[in-house]
Image 1 (cartoon, rainbow, N blue to C red):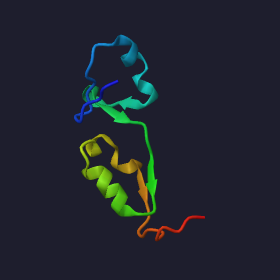
Image 2: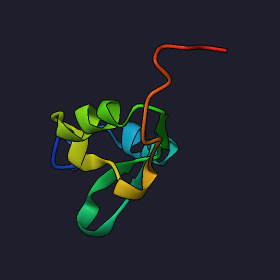
Image 3: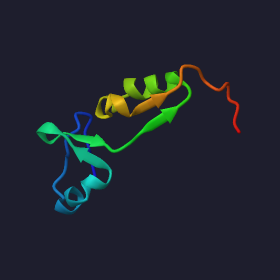
Length: 75
């Protein structure tokens, strides 16, 4: 399955397109948006995802982050 940075499907496989809704929701104009909730205590990580090549695919309200990190403390 190939989703371009614009969110459009690239390919000719009907089988792949049949199951695209497992990982993506189809938005207006045939644009596919990942079905994902991104969570982290560090806001910088989310900024990196947004600034990346596929950052525009994600819905802004699916980013959940804290105001400060945990300082690499894990429980």
